[in-house]
Length: 84
Image (cartoon, rainbow, N blue to C red; front, side, top):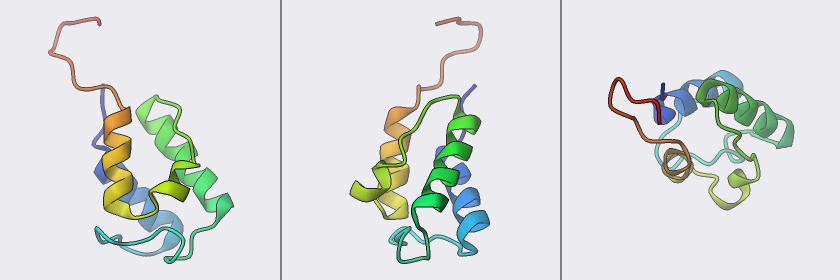
């Protein structure tokens, strides 16, 4: 099973920062800090089943860039009925 990482990121961003993200929204400019980054990535890791590193926020702090990077890290959808 895969998740829509952009939707999950948007929901968690809004839940933690109380800001609806725009493509150019910056996590830290929107009020984020290290503890919120850890919480964000813990939630996204749990939802995706993939361990995601919060340090990504330091190199890609904007919503659109982070969503693109995360999408590239998650496994692609597999056709139904395949195990691998």
